[in-house]
Amino acid sequence: DYALDSYQLGPVLVDKVRVVCAAVALVCCALLWAIFRFTGFGKAIRACADNLLGARVVGLNVAHLYGLTFGIGCACVGVAGTLLTLLVDVTPASGPAYTLLAFIIVIIGGLGSMPGALAGGVLIGVSEAAAGIVFTPSAKSMVSFALLMNLVSASNAETKDQLWAFIRKYAPGATPQTHPFLDTLTDYALRYFNDFVKPTKQFRAATDKERAAFEDMIK
Image 1: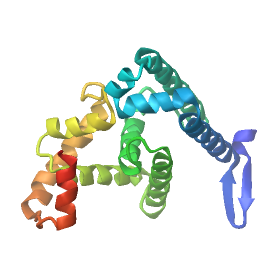
Image 2: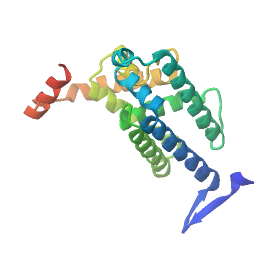
Image 3: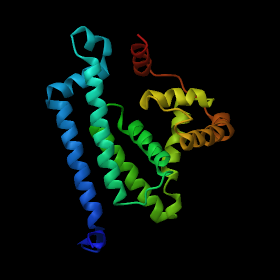
């Protein structure tokens, strides 16, 4: 059975199915990067994402490009779901947990950066695996939750509405109704921030370089 095969790298055994899934994921990431980097419609999609009004002014068919983007997104989700079924037991409740992971990965890697998203995914995967080994397997999600609490502290959000407004910048269309698990975690993170972090949080004066950067952002 291929699912039980493994590769031995010295004292380490690596599941064959995980190696295959990782290889397929890397090929898909490279293909997607090449599409956005070198093809005409990929560059057009990036132009719409960067400046929608400018894309319309130069004559790009925005509605057509939105359709292409939706199709590419569906294809990526299909590949990801297929690979996921080879690694874990999929249930109707699997979605919210992976939505949280995807959001954290985007935050770490940077919006619009495919290499950053790949690096963020690897970082989260390694961190959760290490947490599962050092502590307990059930504690692996604490890394993602810790990053969510760090987001609350960095954004200085005091209410769920403020935090969700920030989340929607990176995940348009995300709401507490469509992602109840993430909504529950944001509630816990806000409670922790208000009870333990905020009372002792101190701010320093911005340096000249930081002040110039902030002023440039609001222009």
